Structures are given as C-alpha cells and as structure tokens.
Image (cartoon, rainbow, N blue to C red; front, side):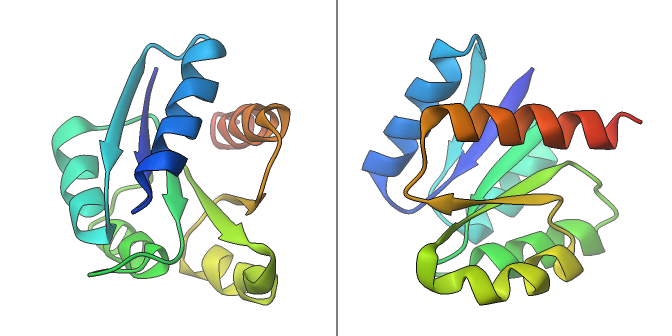
Length: 122
C-alpha cells in the first residue's frame, strides 16, 4: 500500500509518516501543498491520500476538487483543525471520503485509514 501525506508542516508530515510506518505502511510519499499533491496523485498513484486543509499555494479542498475533476477516485482523508469542523461538509461535497480532526491520536489516524479503505473497496 502507498499513502500520500500532504501537509505544509514538515513536523506534521514526519508525525504522520512515523504513525503510518509503525502501522506497517511501507510506502509513504509526501507533498508540501495542494499543487504538489495533485501532481503526486497522478505520478505516484497512491492507494490513499491524507490531505491537510490549510496550505499555501493551493488549499487541500482545492486539491481535492482538482483530483476529482481529473476523474481520479483515490480515497482522500481531510485533516482539519478544530476551527474548521464546520467546513467538513464542504470537504465531503468536494470529494473527500473522510476526515480527521487535528490534533489526533495515532490510533484515530489508523482507524480512519482502515474505515476509508473498507468503504471504498465495497
């Protein structure tokens, strides 16, 4: 399995990569903004994307919209902060499959990954 982690924070990417690696995910690709995320989805064909919402250059929701507009149905989990919970509905409408609220527990991330993959494989 290959997971794309998209976040402008190097620390947050490191945390997510560590969580995923410790859970047995061997292939993790990283992107620092929405533009790079759209490019990496096309080039790397990940099985899942963990997408930050607030990033420079292109927001996470704009990247989700671009990915969906290209016809790509890769499962996407939006990672948002507490203040953005009211926008979760917008993220789902844009094409996100699930969401997780920051700060999060490592167990929550892995539960969301498993839940999202189970939903899309039905």
